Structures are given as C-alpha cells and as structure tokens.
Amino acid sequence: MKQMIVQCQPQMTQMALLEEGRLVEYAAELPRKRGILGSFFKAKVVNVLPGMQAAFVDIGQRKNAFLYVDDVLHAHLDKQPDVKPSISELLKVGQEIVVQVLKEAVGSKGARVTTHFSLPGRWIVYMPRADYVAVSKKIEREGERARLKAMGEQLRTGEEGLIIRTVSEEMSIEAIENDLNQLRKQWAAIQRKAGEHSAPCELHRDLSIVQRLIRDVFTPEQDELVIDSEEQAKDAEVMLHQIGSAKAHVKIFRNAEETIFKAYGIHEQLERDFARKVWLQGGGYIVIDHTEALTVIDVNTGKFTGGSNLEETVTQTNIEAAEEIARLVRVRDIGGIIIIDFIDMEQEENRREVSSVLEARLKKDRTKSYVVGWTRLGLLEMTRKKVREEKTLV
Image (cartoon, rainbow, N blue to C red; front, side):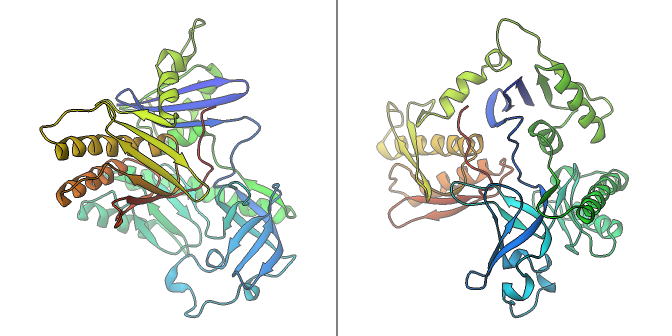
C-alpha cells in the first residue's frame, strides 16, 4: 500500500510518498514559484544559431529557452526528412510559435522547449500532432498490448498520437475515450489562447504536485491520501472524482501538537535521506557527492562484518547499497550521469547480481533511467533523466 502524505503551510506545500512506510518520493512546491515543466507558452524567436542547429526563444521567463532542431521537426520519425534541414530554414527571428517546456531551467541554463506537444491524462498521454500509438513497455502481456494499441488506433483521429499508460491495463475503451476527450478540450483551449495573445505568454500550466501525484501514481482503491488542510483535501477529492474514483476519500489530519510530517516519521526520514552520508541497515554506508557534470556515489562496508568470507561480505553490502541507491535517486530526484563506486568484487557473477538488483529496483521509478554497465576501473555507470533541478531538503 502507498501513502501520500501532504503537509500544507502558507509558504510551502510538501508531499511525501511512502511505500510500506518508507519514503520513496518527495516534492516541495512554493505557491508563488511553481515549476514550469510541461507548461505551454507562446514564444518569440530571438536568436537562430545554424552552427548549433538550435534557437533561443523568449517565453517570458528570466532566461530565454533553448529549442533544438529535432524538437522543431515532426514528432513521428518516419515523417521527418531524410536530410535534416538547417534550423534557419525552419525558424526566423521574430517568429511566434507555441512551445512546451521539456526540461526546467537548471543552473545557468534556460529551459529546454519542444514543439512535440504532449498532455498527460490518467490513462493516456495525448500528443496532438504525433500520428502514432504506443503502449507502455511496463505492460508485458502481448495480448493486452495488442488490445490497447488497437483501441488507441480506433479512438485517435487525423494526426493525433497516443501513449497508453501502464495504469490503463485492463481498462475499458469508455474510460480511455473519456480521458482522451478531456485532453482534446485542453489542447483546444491552448490553441484558442495562442490565437488571442501575443508572445511571450503562458498558455497552459501543468497541475500542482498533489494533483500530479494523484493523476500519475495514486490508486484510490488501494492507497491512502492524508492531508493536513481541509481546503487542499477538497481539491484532492475533486481530482480523484475526475479520474473516475466515485468512492474517493481523503483523510484529513488534525493535530495541533505536531505536524503531519512529524507524526508519520517523515522528518526523520528526510534528514537521513538527504544527508551526504547515509547508513545502511546492515552497517555499511554510502556517500553521495555532486559535481556540475555528474553525481558520484561511494559504497563502504563501514561496521558491516557479516558473511563467511570477504567476497560474501562485500557482495552483501553492495546488494543492500544497490537497493538503497535506487530509492535515494528517486527521493532526491538525482538526474544526469551517476557513477557508483561499489566495493571491489572478485567474481563476475557477483557484479552481475549487484547490477541486476539495481536495475530491478529502478523499475519502480517513474523517471526513466538506464544502467550502462561496469567500467574497466570497476565503477558502475548509469543515467537518469534530468528534467528539474535536483531536490534539496527545505
């Protein structure tokens, strides 16, 4: 069972997602500083750089956004030209275009934007101009994949594209069609607003963190949602009804003596999980360091002395560390290149077991990651999609 615990304060809303009581996701949102990932803007092209095959566009934020040539071409690879055109053939300075934020501004870099539009719903992701249907790879049964793909082809019209999400498994065509119709209305509203306003201006912003988590990971029949604000609880119940949960119920936390995060033990977990040095239950520990280019994670045996020999002791520590690392990169939302310095193992089969454990645990993560493999120096390389600045404890 999952628990979504939401702490609402005047200066900030914080959300913790627990699985069997352990923290697996954390997010914080300032009322006046909501992220723009997934948001739509009407932008003005301010600079075209043929040498970089990119353009900078003004979306009304502090920094101009970056638009790469591949994000201007057709979203369907089969419909792109055989020879990639110059960006200067596609965009002109002063031109106004609709874009969507693909990646938040990070550090000195502005946001990355695209014209490959997508609007996520409960059951599907709607892509108004993609012209294809895809089914989540996490749906493994071939018969169900074929059913959902055929359903998507039946429902889409013109150049519409759909991604059938994992939660759509066994869902009826009526539920998915209802989701599609709602997303079509959103897209129509975005187009209408784009026709009425000049660039730069915001056309559509994605949901709040609470609403996004309800849409993306919450299963009303199995999971628990606890909020310490009656107002936010009402908004959450509206969202639950919108995704088709007639029996949705939100538990309201009322306790003047302590905060909801303290009552559920989240404060202690956050302090531990966001520390540079994180102890493992078996006595080992990991150290997480960040550079501008990558994140380095070092694994140490620490106080762990179990196992009948050194190789067994080291392997047990590395396996426990792999499980914990998969959880921590999710909690801290670590993105980009990640290098893991596990304790040296002599046997190849033990290295394979450690990397297999890491890959298996990463499958629970909604953010895409890829375990590249072991280097000649015995380091494990992986990447995780980076769309926002890494979370820090607030």
